[in-house]
Length: 184
Image (cartoon, rainbow, N blue to C red):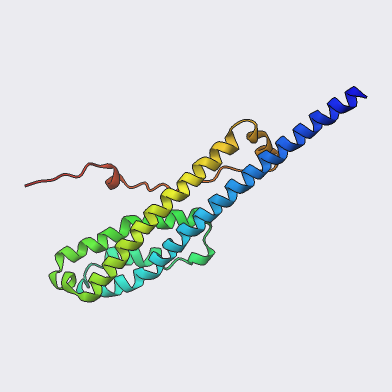
């Protein structure tokens, strides 16, 4: 009689532990998905803003075709058909290319003074800030989830139910890692 109670108690503890670990993994995976979805909204907003920016710049900088065609080619990829990893890679490439378009404005005073360009630039700056904030939130959710997937005892449950690590959203831009040089 007593061994049956002990066995039942041990089984109940094991079942509750497995259920608790599984539920924790599911909650954190949902948080990662929600964080990516939030970031995806801002990435899409930037994606939709770029053609307007490029068309505005084209009118002033007709011979800057290389920079503009690079952005257009990145923008013309079918965003809806991209995987989350492809969206992150495309966004990283756009994050490196868009400042080059903005730098073109320095060479064209009429472009800098254009109301349309100024409005697009302000919108783009706001969207870039939103993307940076969403990327931090996403990476925080991924970090928490990945730590749960890799630590005991949840790593056993994660392996059993095929919970995989999620990728961080990292920009590999050497310019961001360099110190800003101020010259007088």
